[in-house]
Amino acid sequence: MKIAVMGGGSWATALAKICLVNPDHTINWYMRRESQIESMKKTGHNPSYLSSVSFDTSRINFYSDINEIVKDSDVLIFATPSPFLKSHLEKLKRSLRSKIIISAIKGIVPGDNIIVSEYFRLKYNVPENNLMVIGGPCHAEEVAQQRLSYLTIGGTDRKLTTWFANLISCNFIKATTNEDVFGIEYGSVLKNVYAIAAGICHGLKYGDNFQAVLMCNAIQEMNRFIGAMSDSPRSIDDSVYLGDLLVTGYSRYSRNHTFGTLIGEGYSVKQAQLEMEMIAEGYYGTKCMKEINEEKHVDMPILDSVYNILYGKIGPMVEIRLLTDKLH
Image (cartoon, rainbow, N blue to C red; front, side, top):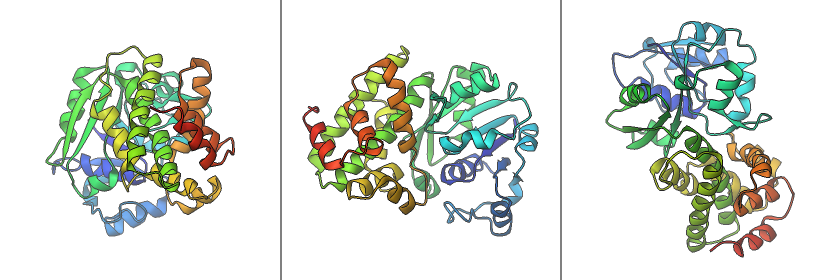
């Protein structure tokens, strides 16, 4: 089956690298900007993201027309920031019903407040068995350096998830399968929110002792919410949940942790966004998850605190001090 990578950012670049590890493979690659494509063709490097990664462009068919790449591909791996998914799809005229859709997007679709797999199922009539998700823990920067990383492929069709897990497994990628699509997607949204919380506390000079308590409470909070959304069996201490939370909460590559640190240091939300060159999806995910939880009423003090800081304009020092009395 012909595989397409949809997006031109860091995670899309890392996934393209993974898909091309097998020397017999070729891929289709969609980028909106023609200038980015032209630069890739000339240099073999993405000019904007993970620019140290080299590609054999003779094995890549580049597209800037979303309808053309959908026509020419069987499997579409979406790796765009969740706030931009709708704008990427607004020119799409072709049906996705017969395509295999793989979401590598770790966010909620803003406005609709649903996970990405549900968005494709409801909006584009993609059958549930044709939907898969990619979970971490995995930073694009370490994939680019070919450091050993683990991925989890979520989906309801065991044969399909096993096929894709085998396809991307190599000497630096170990891939396993999991049927808990809802849990993987909601967990990947929440871990970004908790990484912002960890960053805020780092910016406020809270130490490692407190950060450990924060992460322990975060995984409990995540488990409560996912359990309220889906009764699928899961072990919350699996790497796709706990591991992804930890790496996003602690890693120097975590854009959400960086964003939170700036907020903790006194930057306004707008100043922090301007300071960063990449999207911190947790900013958008915080609002979406808060709105979803207004119906579910799950006890989520960390989510509430991050929301109050980012959207309620409550000072980080005051809000985190109040949060410390709710943790254990």
